[in-house]
Every structure is written in C-alpha cells, then in structure tokens.
Amino acid sequence: MYAKLYTKLSLGIANNFFVKNGISSNAKKLGVSRFVAADNLADSLIVLDNLEAEGKLYSLALLGEFVNKKETAQAMTNGIIESLEYLSDHNKAGYMSIKPSQFGLGIDYELALENALAIASKAKETKAHICLDMENTPFVDGTIGLFKDLRAKGFDNVSTVLQSYLRRSLDDMKDLLEPNQNIILRIVKGAYKEDNDNAYQRQGKIEEKLLEMIYMGLEAGAKINIATHDPQIIKETSAFIRGAKLAKESYEYQMLFGVSPKAQNNIVTGGHPLRVYVPYGQDWYGYFSRRLAERPANLAFVLKGLFN
Image (cartoon, rainbow, N blue to C red; front, side, top):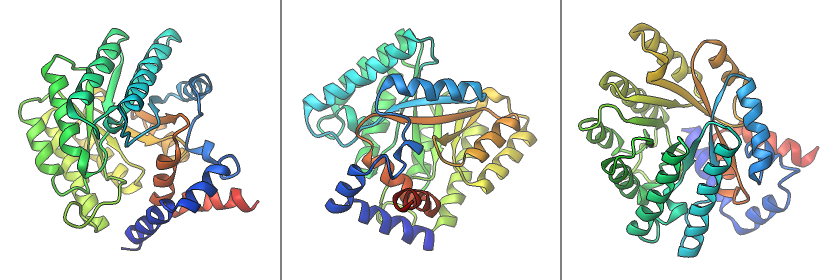
C-alpha cells in the first residue's frame, strides 16, 4: 500500500510546473545521467560498448512521448530511423524500443501506422528489432493494433509490451497468443498513473498477474522478455525456467539502465540472457520522473546529488 502511495505522490509532484523546471535546470547535479545514457547518439555508443563488454544485451530508446503535432511525430520518426542507421553503420546490434505516442498515435492512428511501417522497414533493412513500448490506457488499443498490423504485413522483427497492473492485460495476452505462438512479448508491472477502474492498485495482485502472464507466455511457446527488478520475481521465474529446461532463446530478463546494477550482474553471471533498456535524448523528464516514482532508493540517490 505504501509503495503505491509513494508512486502516486511522486508522479503527482513531478507534474508540478515548478518542480519540473527545478529538476530540468539541475539535471547534471541531480544525477540524470545515472538513468539516461546521454543526450546524443555518439555518447550513447560508449554505454553500449560497456554493456557489451559486460556480457549484456541492450535496447536503445530515443526519449520522447505524448507528441501532439504531426511535424514533431515526423521528427521523432526520422530520429528513430537515424538511430537504426547509426547502429548499423557502427556494427552495433540493432534493437530499439519505441513509444507509439512519440510517432503519432495520439494524433491519428493512420499517421502512426504510416510512421511505424517506415520504422519497421528500416529495421528490417538493417536487420534490427523494434519493440513497441506500452504506455498508459488511452494508447493500449492503438499499440496492440499497430503490433497486429505490422505482423500482418510480414514484419516479424517487431514485439510489444503488456503491463500486469492493467486489468485488461491478461485478456490481451490470450488474444495475442492464440494466433501467434511465435511472438515476442515483454511483460512488465507498469509504471504509469492509472485509476482503479483500469488498473490493480495492490502490489501483491500486480505481482500475481505478472507471474501468471509470464508463465502463460512461456508455456504457449512465445519468447517472453521478463522486465523486472523485483528479486522475488527473478527468483521464482528463474526456478521455473530451470525446471522447464527452457532454452535461452525462449526468454530474457530485461532491466533499466542505471537501476539495480548488482542484480543485473548477478543475472548475467547466473547464465541468463539480460537486456538493458538504454534511453537517450533531450526529452528525458517524463522517463526520469517515473524512475523516481518507482523506488524511494532512486529518489534518495537524486536528493543526495542535490545536497552534496
């Protein structure tokens, strides 16, 4: 209960105009670089090199969301395509996470589909994979629609995300698994502010649904990306994976850049595949505020930077 209250209060405070301005003007001092790799592609490459040296996979993400202008959506689309080209030109594994609201889903579905097709085509050309990130409730239907449409057009280099705190997610998963046994899904708890009608509020229920969805996907033969920093979830799922003797190709753990580095290393040394979500770009505030809202330890790190 207290964790959920902390998250709600943190997100509410983060949306305050003065708080946002204060944090934005003190980004370096507040340690934004712990959670955001860089504000440009070239510096992000250093982070990717380091992850590779540590035996970790990565998913690059150009930050930006909730775009409401066509020209901005086009600029974001171009930025994602340029990122895919940059990864290819520098002999880096092409894997990107993208938010549908950043390339037009909040404006018009057809615009978003047109931009998604351009991104997926470039990804296929550069032998890359793209994951359609899941955002809050208004974007869920559209994101699943984009995923289905891209798959129907032959883009098997696309995956998407389901959030266990949304009441609808279990049904969405059943719908996606039925016709597409070989799909890739990332399963997460969820980090957006949602009301009781749309989302479970009790942490225990969210974790119960998370495990149910992970096991359902693995048993159906889908590749399941287990996105969590929860040590108990990691312990339970790794025991299931060992018991079921699952191949490494059928799952991977996914964590956020800068969060739980010791746990990340433990997963790698334990022989499990691990992919790190690596965000970069100048539009970092929304992402950064959600990281603070997730864990009091993250906020403590930031406050230490502010007052030291």
